Length: 156
Image (cartoon, rainbow, N blue to C red; front, top):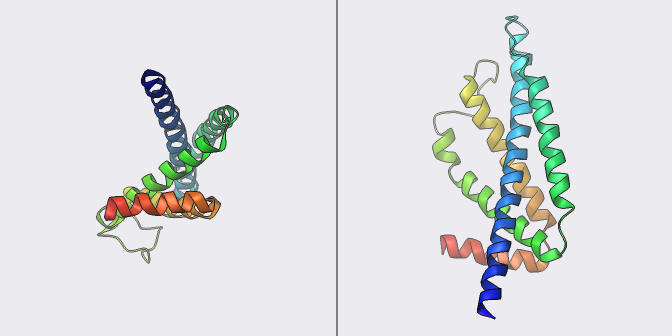
């Protein structure tokens, strides 16, 4: 009986890891699209555009398709809840590091003069905040309790 539980736990961990990997790939692809969109707006004055937006959009579409295919394998609410909680906790961790990542920069800084690395980090930060807010809004009351306990365990 203990062996079956261990197998079930390993399968769940593999499933959760795959879901989180797909979600992170999708998040990165979204940031990349926005980054290239803004970069192309910035470079119109200099005529030195990377034309990376098309490639980024193709990457985003491929990520969305892989995630859609994966979501079709979701066969119970517990898996969905586990994914939502794990992703929210990961995003909280990323946002917790925002002071270090964004420390020398101000969000009042003009984006047209911002170094590309700074711009990429700001876009990532904004998207992380939006995704976390959406995940928290989608949580059931039971998930909110588990989420709060997990946060307390980390910060407790």
